[in-house]
Image (cartoon, rainbow, N blue to C red; front, side, top):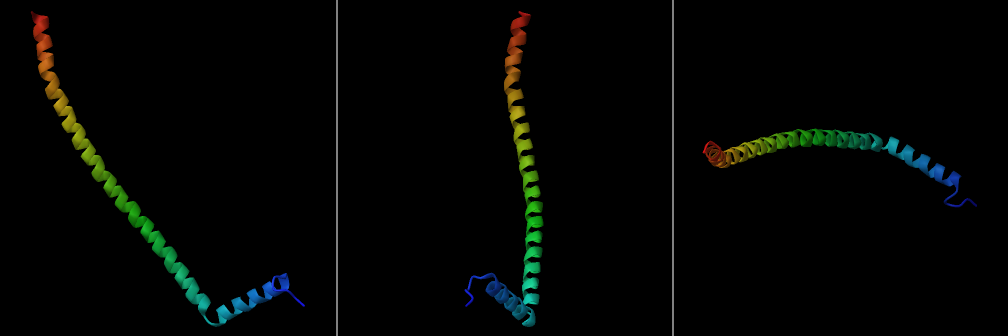
Length: 91
């Protein structure tokens, strides 16, 4: 008597299952689903990559604007101090 977990029984069950799938055209449907899923994941990856690039560019432009504004504020605030130092040196 063969047990359920012996190699012969499992290989026989596997072969019968594969034959049933091929005969019922389930394999074609399964392959189509796998192909569709792979294409969907690839397109999704490309889309997210593209949009992240655009988001990064927007953030970089904002950072540049803020940096320029901060530099202008620092320059404006330092100018009176520099003028005072120049006046003190001249006296």
